[in-house]
Image (cartoon, rainbow, N blue to C red; front, side, top):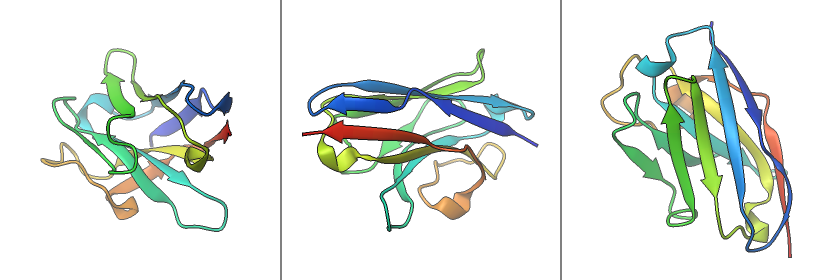
Length: 127
């Protein structure tokens, strides 16, 4: 069973940057796509970005396109989310997730495409 541990959240001013990391263990990390989701208080978890198992393709939500970048280092079993030009509306708990399908041809954007989740890390952007 894979385990995911996020880090890198915190408090930042609008316009600033943060980099989230998600360390994976317990499964062949390089064979599964990875995703980042976020959850605002009182709302459902929403897709942010995903990266294919090989790292060759990525997909971003429209709300973060051009500001956030997902990447992975399979040698370190880690996926990253670089967040630039942060806005107050980016304030949320961010979760990384591991795909439930081995070598999925296309990255998934639904929570149902992922079967393992980290504990979440809080990102707060002040105005």
